[in-house]
Amino acid sequence: MNAPHPIDQFKKFKYEITRFMMIYKFALDQMETKIEVLKEEFQSLHDYSPIEHTKSRLKSPESIMNKMFRKNHELTFESIKQNIKDIAGVRITCSFISDIYRIKDMLCNQSDLRVLEVKDYIENPKPNGYQSLHLLVEVPVYMSNGEERACVEIQIRTIAMDFWASLEHKIFYKYNKDVPEHLTRELKSAADSANALDQQMERLHREIQEIKDADNERDEEELRRIIINNQQFTLPSNLLKLLGSGE
Image (tube, rainbow, N blue to C red; front, side, top):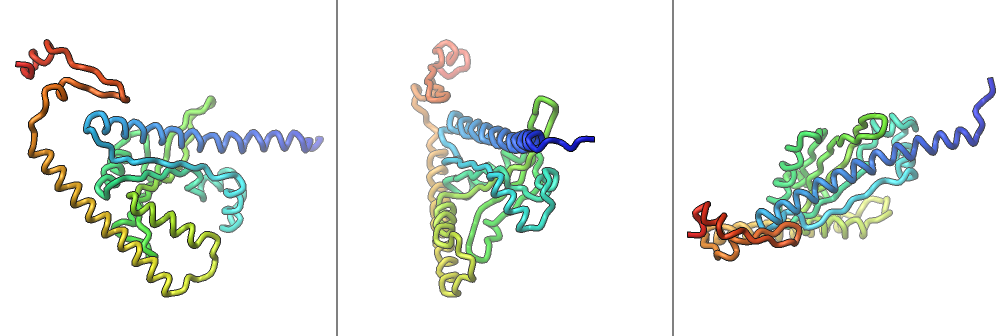
């Protein structure tokens, strides 16, 4: 029996790796859509969104391969799927700490998502001061020949946490030696300052919300308006009368 031609082997491998990467890309697309729906829902119904912005990324095949070699794992698609859980990643940045847990609960309550792991680095920060909430979820992806499931890592953090983590990464990017102790202390101190700012802004946010809730008088024109995706609709006066609001 003749051995497969090298070109045929290459075509087969290209097909398999393209399909493998597409599964994670589609899982990422689904998560971005879910997050956008939540953001728009809150903005429309509550005139406020707990989500400031999102950022997603898909690991390159080279990065995946290097990580497999570093961890001394077998280089097969099944082994990659089992051992690397952050091929697809989404970072959600919020204004306030309470928003982080609100978003986490909303995502965990979605029936098609399977939550595999929750790591709370806010309650239990890393030694260097890093804070964030990490979720590992399994997302169903429906390909032409059936259902696949792919892991997506979700990091949820405040603006202050993201600011600290981004600069910490830039400062120590490709620095593989032990960080001097005095720099470690300063880094932790900066993280504590960021956390103190988060706590202060959380308190201010809560107090202002309490004032808003106490002042429940609404302008009639505001009650008549509905805004969906920046498009404004006005409720008919007759409908408001039927509901007892236009009398």
